[in-house]
Image (cartoon, rainbow, N blue to C red; front, top):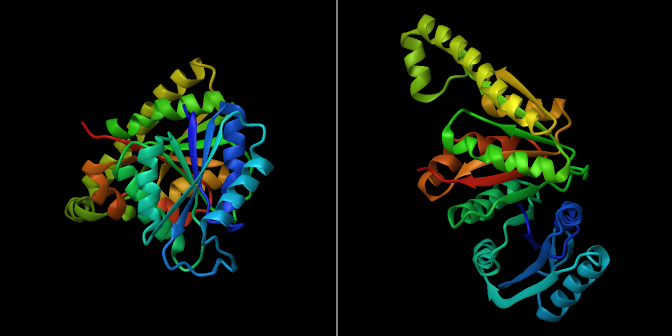
Length: 297
């Protein structure tokens, strides 16, 4: 599980919204923490309406203050300021993830006017593409409520199901409840080639989707029995409709604190970011999302 967390900070209060999550993980998992600030080339004096850290001395002082204020209890806190000015902060964070070898990166996806999508696309996507480091994306408007309830969508694909062991282990160590969700499309929510085929064979398609719902219930029950047998408080549900919408609805109904999503790395990166459920969920919710990279065989 997580033993080393990388927390990039830009000096803004918005970015600091990620700190409570890291504090909680550090307390429960006894993690090592690395605080990172990257000096941006030609940086403006303000970011998100607040003073922007633009030089090494003030960045070092800032990270020292954060360490003393929030992580004095932690046995290992490192502070790193990347002093060589860079144009692409996101790429620098990716490079530092390789240098420091964390097993979790926590980012605040802050901003307005699409910046949340930019952050998710430029940093999380690159990190996942370049390694196997999970990324926890925090939205500053979502109040910190701990890690009491975790939600894991499953689609029945083997590579995505590999995240189940990870989610179960995390739930056990954090004493969290785990909710499994599988969404079966309705006839009206089919997309792409499947929708085209459904138009030609509507009755057959509807009957097939009903069979899929039954199989999904059996699939989840199998996992539910196994997890409950290990002492992990687990619930499971099958929903019908658009996958992203139904996952978010389920998360809202169950007061989910973190949604865990399995994502493809290099072999499936383009398909993941352009058409998978993960970015659609990110666009529909302010609930923290933990992106966990999985690899195709």
